[in-house]
Structures are given as structure tokens and as C-alpha cells.
Image (cartoon, rainbow, N blue to C red; front, side):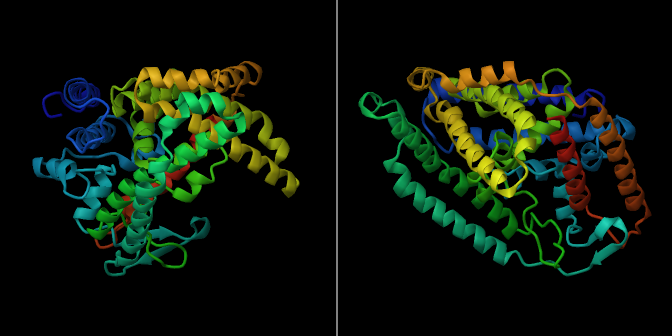
Length: 431
């Protein structure tokens, strides 16, 4: 980062960090421990890779690119000075997130370290007034207890029910020969449902650890209650009730999804969805199952987007029709997600193809057919209009920050979250 300079550091850091991680993954998988889920060095390496690349892009945005070239979210996260060695090592290697993350932005972390995350300046309704919160450090105890309860239930579920519903049973020869199609569909959904609690446990525990240390505070809601979800990595209710592929992805491994969006999706003009899924596969590791899952995910995502764009507006009214649409899309989404991630769990190429062959590649074929029949409509004019609105709003944020005195801090958390919400709406427009 120091030798290359701000102009090209993001490219070099990205290639070096991701390349080094890939070498480590190859070494771990094909030399030491193929097929085993073990607490080894690769987990922390994956998190540090995210932090190194994120920081490199944020410094490049803040110290080299012009403000008008940045999206609102990039402007809110931009780092305007080179971190010291202590700040750099603290951000990458602090005890709170070294094992399982989750990823946080450098500015959010430094705001927390400097004790500025508890002095909030928030906009009132319609941006007409500002509400100043000058409370002492809010207690994270309630949030930590709630998250530890979720951890306990997830762990209990994983150690009991998950063991009796293995994903590998989907390719059992006897099961394939004797089970009816409804039974196969139901077992596919239930077995993948049972495989998720271990992720719920790990990510919720990591979130609780950060909260217990005082990190993760995201201001106050409209009732003045403290919010501790700044770096939360999942929303379980939204995951299980997802009615679209996008809704599932937006609520699963949230911080990694934001990282993929910031370093890839927002910065490429050629097939951003495909490139983002490929980057996600490379980051996860070198098992063939990862690549099968993410390549299938590309087709599924594009097909789901096409269906949503072409059909959803016909089912908004009346409410009964909307409810029927939601039920059907929930069933379709859960089956599609389960079908897509089976190779991610099975890891190897042979069992993955055995599973897809047993389903006659039916969802692959259906997705390709959807893409051929229902292309996604482009909304270029709406996109340009929305970008102008974003730029206007972003300038207001910047002016408000500049007008604040030293004793009244407008936290990075607030600005970033508002910018991320604007960027999210922009992303949904594009999709």
C-alpha cells in the first residue's frame, strides 16, 4: 500500500491478497485436509483479505478519485488519509473479528476506537430537522443476551436435528430409487434448512462478541432505543421467509455481500453479476462445489430477476392475489436456493453432478428458458435520474458534515448507512 501509492494500490492489493489467499486454500485443501471443516488459518485469512482489499479501495477513493466520480456509498466510506501502522494492524487483527469477522469498514472501526460512535446526529423526518443524541455509552447487554440465546438455539438445533437430516442423503441410491418427487423436494428443503443453523451460530456469536466489546452500535431508532446491528451478518427471519433470490442473498452473509458489491459489482461495467459470483467463489475456496454453486447462482439470479420484472407488477392488487403470489414465490425461492447450494455442502464434483443428474438439471433448464423468453428490461433513463438524485443527496450529507463543530460529531455509521440505503435502492433499480 505504501510502495505502490494511492493511484494503483487497490489493484495490487486486490490481486496480491486474493492470490495469496488462493494459494493458502490450495495448500489446505489438496495437501493437508481435503473435505474437512476444521478451524484452521484459512477462516481468519478470508476475513483479513476482505479488510485489506476494502481498505485499499477506500483509500484509493478518498485520496485519488474526485468526489463527483464516487457513488454516495463510496463517498461515505472513503478514507482521506493513510492509516498509521498501529491503526492498520488494529483494524485487521483486533480480537473481536479475527476468527469469524464480520467485516466492518475502516471508518466505522476507527469511529468506534476513537469513541465517537455514541454521539449521534440524525436527520428528522423528511430531513427538515436534526435530532441530537448526547447519551452516554449505551449498554449492549440486552442485544448480547438476545444474540447468545439465538446462538444457543442454533447450536442445539445443529447438534440434534441437523445430524439426522444429512444433505448427502439427497444422493443416496436407495432414496433416489424409492422416493417420490414430492418426497425428494421436501427432503431437499428440510435438509438444507437443517444445514443453516451452524452458520447462524457462528455469525451471531461473532456479532455478539463485537457488541460485548462496544462495537456495532448504529444509533437510535425513532423511539430512542439503541440499535446494535451495524455489522450484523444475517437476518434469520428474512432468510427463512424470502420470496425472491435477491431477498435471500441480501440477508445472508450481509457483510460479505457488501464487500462483493463495493469491490466488484459497483466497479465493473461488463456483466457485474457474473463477475461478482465468480469473485465470491474464488474467495470461498477451491472446492469444485463452490464454483458449481455460484455459477448456478448466476443463472438463478438472472432468471429470478427476469420473472420478478415481468410478472410481479401484475400481482400487487388485490391483497389476496398478492398473498398468493408471495406464497408461490416463497416455495419457488426456497426450492431454488436449496437446489443451488447442494454442491456448496457436498464440495466434490462427482456427488454434485450426481445430485443435479437426479433432478435432470431441471432448474438449470427452467432458468435458461426463462432468460430466453423473458429478458430483463433496461431502465437507463430511470437510472440516470436516480443517480442525479443520489448526487444531490450526497452533497447535502457532505455539507452537513462540514458544518458541524468539533464537539458535535456526525458519525460515519449514520452517513454510511444512509448512503448504503440509497445505493441499495439504486442497485434494485438496476436489477
